[in-house]
Image 1: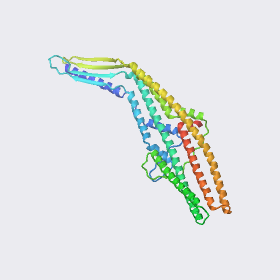
Image 2: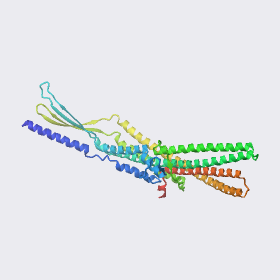
Image 3: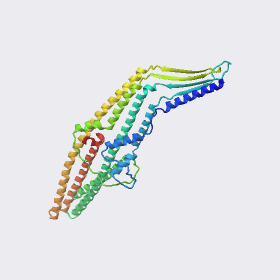
Image 4: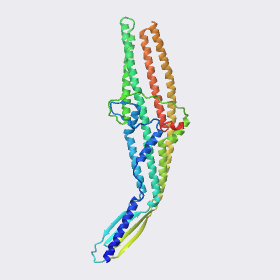
Length: 445
């Protein structure tokens, strides 16, 4: 009768332990599915981008490459962006960990009598850290802020790669056109050299004129080689930005249009940047995380335990117990937590000041490039007018054909400078969009 009663008690105790463990392990865990969090990062990035990323676009080597396709390919293949998305998955899992209690400890022992006395043949013990009850809110708050940081970092990376690939694509398009114009200039310089040699052979030009024409021809060839090299470098930079620097051949489609000029004051821009930039939002999330971690610096460490003991005399006992850990380094832990919060606050202040400086610097470059482009447009129009007049004078026999070719070269050089100035405006506009947080969309509201 006694052995049967003992078995029932043991079965009842095991059942109680199993249900308790199940509740502790599964009762309050969040889902580790980070799909919605990743989507939040994509949505946040799209809200800050000045262009629409069409994820349906694909590209392979040998196909024409438009700027929209380059952007879509970059967003899908940027390694650091994919890393940031993987961090989001990690942070979501860490929130689930923060919501769970500390892992319980179960231990047991079997006694073997060697001295003939009635010892304890069976000992079962369970230990649980109870500090989880009052640290759980702070742990969850800290984990949620790290998740928010990961989302912000991923969205910010998207803004950066899109801006970078737009800048480099404009550079490639401009360098391609500059190379074409350099080839035309070489052809004109070669014509001038050939005509000058013919004139010198009949005594209508001096050897000095021939040398001068030859030098101009060689200099034009030198400029062409530089233009070809710059085009190759810009093309490689674009492929690297897209995540495929090993690609050999690329075909480009219609050059991108110059972004619209902006009409905002410097003050409006840096105030908007402080509010809109995602890296500053990340800094604010770090401050919130450090604030939540203050509650984790020196919590009371309390443990609870329950032990079942059965001896050889069929004596059974349940022994509840508890423990408190005295933290001798509690003050130091609190000082460390306070210091980390202060560091995060000061780092944010420094980042904000840097943003304001960057906005003012880029805005100054943008304003200067606009003025330079306006001047060069006048130079180009004047060169076109000069060439038109020279052609009319040549038709009427008032201008020697040899004098017409340098004017044509002057027009090509004016167009080259105009393209370079237009590229500078495009680059500074995109940089200004990036430095205020991605786009001007929010400023128009």
